[in-house]
Length: 312
Image 1 (spheres, rainbow, N blue to C red):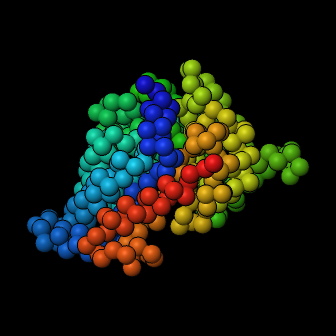
Image 2: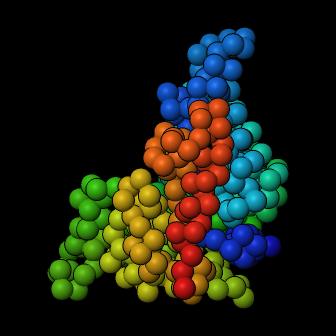
Image 3: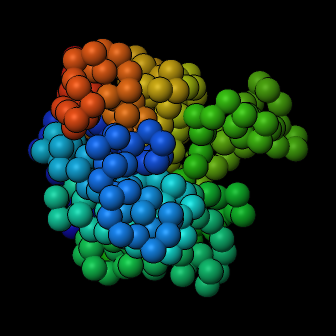
């Protein structure tokens, strides 16, 4: 099965486009996990923290696996810890795959030629979780080097039934300094900003890889914090699955993300990371659940997100 088919099957099974990001930060982990890992024998601080990250993320996976189609581990938090963190990331991703989840590794890789292909072969396992060291169904990719950045990733994705999500219009406040730049000869009236040129290339690759499916293996990262552009880009990229960050903690709402879908809940995943990972730190969940019941807060926050994203 292609990436698009597997993702669609999971969305249809769970009846939600909710995507749970996995963004572990040690000082925000439940005290019960911090105490538990500190009581064990670890060779150094990084190994101890990596153990905590693995336990935290795997327990979140166990909570959300019956409810959502996919998870998105953020590679940076694991890589910060060196080899032990990378090992923990690999185990977290394998655990998610065994739970039946689609796994999108948020590593924002990007290069050209054989280097890009090495990144692709290292991360993109696709249909077979054992086909690559990182076991990812899909990977986020930075297109800054140009169209030839994407070609090796697309090649491996097609071979393995994997997917990529290309950064097109990101949710961070400073994104416009590059992404809103007009190309030479373009004007504000023609609206040929840089992100639209990236969108054109993404749609080209997506359309070429659809087979007999509505969506190809090349998708787009488009932020919920720019709802007008989200609708515009959905029109420009009808064959690209969307990954939409910015919902929840960054201020995006269900109304803001609605334009990212093609029909019903098809065509997009809506990401929430901190608001679910650390739900036990914020109202109303910190008042409802004692610290040792942090998983119940994660469950409640996930269910709230799913309810919020039910569109008529």
